[in-house]
Amino acid sequence: MKSIEPPEFKKFIHNVRNPLNSIALHAELGNMLIEDHASPEQIKNAFMVILQQCKCCEQVLTDMRKKTSEDNPDF
Image (cartoon, rainbow, N blue to C red; front, side, top):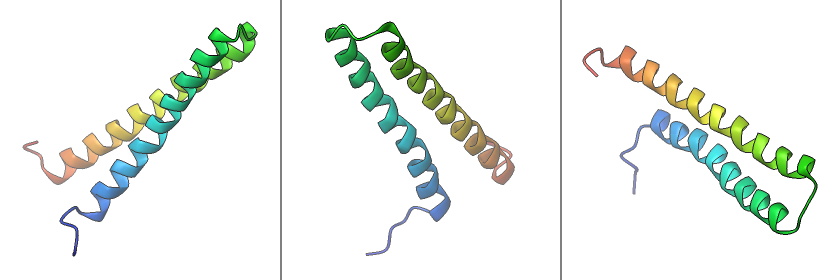
């Protein structure tokens, strides 16, 4: 059965899903580090990755918005 999603949309979903998975994993890691009384540096690193991945998501969404606006000026 052929998917009705255009390949570009599938790529967009993939490009957002990857950083979201990383965000979820590092949030869990950060929580575990806090519970285990890890060093502040270890905790900081886990949350820095979350912030970096949020920026990646923002860039993917911005790029998609630009692409959508170019393809459909009324959007």
